[in-house]
Amino acid sequence: MRRRLLLSAAVVLLAAAPACSAKPAKPPLDPATALHMRLLTLDTHLDTPASLVLPGWSIMDAHTVKDDATQVDLPRMKRGGLDGGFWAIYTPQGPLDAESTRKARDFAVMRGVAIREMVAAHPDSFALASKAADAAAIKASGKRVVYLSIENAWPLGDDPTLLRSFYAMGVRISGFAHFRTNQFADSSTDAARWDGLSPLGVQLLAEMNRLGVVADLSHSSDRALDDALRLSKAPVLLTHSGCKAVFDHPRNIDDVHLKALAAAGGVIQINSVYVKGLKQSPEREAALKAMGAKYPEDHIMSGSERKDFLAARRAIEVQFPAVRAGFEDVMANLLHALKVAGVDHVGIGLDWDGGGGVTGLEDVVDLPKLTAALLAAGYTEADIAKIWSGNVLRVLAAAEAEAAKEAKP
Image (cartoon, rainbow, N blue to C red; front, side, top):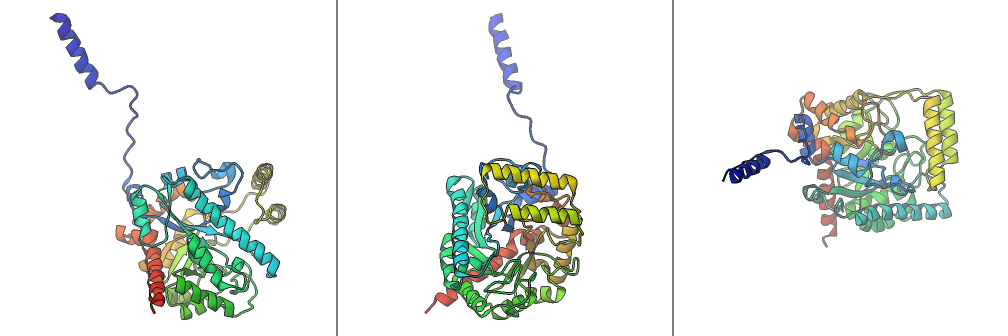
């Protein structure tokens, strides 16, 4: 009887004791981070598709900026609470002759294929989105949201209807030009040829409206933005831009245009590139130019080339360190845009993996800092929800509505 009682007591003690293999409970999130994780967070300009074709690189693995200069992968998206966004088909601008444009078309198609292959290979982690309403449902399922976008329309050649093929692939935002003026529009950083949108660019804008693709005027000139605001039947976006009142750079938008964009229902998505005037050393600029010539953007590197590229980049950073902007500079642009345009017309498009990132906002892990700063500035949860996704999804829904209207006989 005594032995039975001892055994019973032992069972009770073992049941009450914590399991040796049990993991310690995670500390609770601070209120700002908890809010950030609840919100639907979308970035309108992810250049991460360029990483998808790197030899040996996987979106499923955790990387670091220090190790391989990338800023987005699934583990970091989870840590930073980024639910997804618009994954860019970016083609660096080249000559306008037919042969070059055909090669650009093929390059753009294959970059779109790489995005879709990422989703197909990891269906438990990513999901394609085609409508504005899809994003919330994808977040609720625990997956990351994948819309497609086109940064430079050069690959469309002289045929705006080729956009239909990219729409079928999943593209829901398209720009016109990039750093150089092309057949569709003047670039903000190149000499004007068309005084805004070209005749072909006007046709492309009409095709966007017909399909339900949102027009993106980031990189295009102010006059091109004027044309788009005048001609588009749906609101337009600046997917990754800043404010000239904070940093007077051609890529940024002045307050007059910012107010006009808002009046037309459009949205500016604040980036983290053109946020502060910085002067780099001539030696750094020369070294980066030489490295760019050796490793052009449209060249897909082999494993050994990638290794050499990263070593060369690290050497430049050690020998000629960059003068960098900081988190407060991104916030200065964001708060200025909110003040001028209003909370219904501002969002986030930080240009990750495309030149974005500042001190204190190095990669997507740091994104909760933006939500905390917006809360500290007095913005409400409803306001921040608009900034993180509500505004861009409203614009996409408006594009869908215009396309449905034009489709009626």
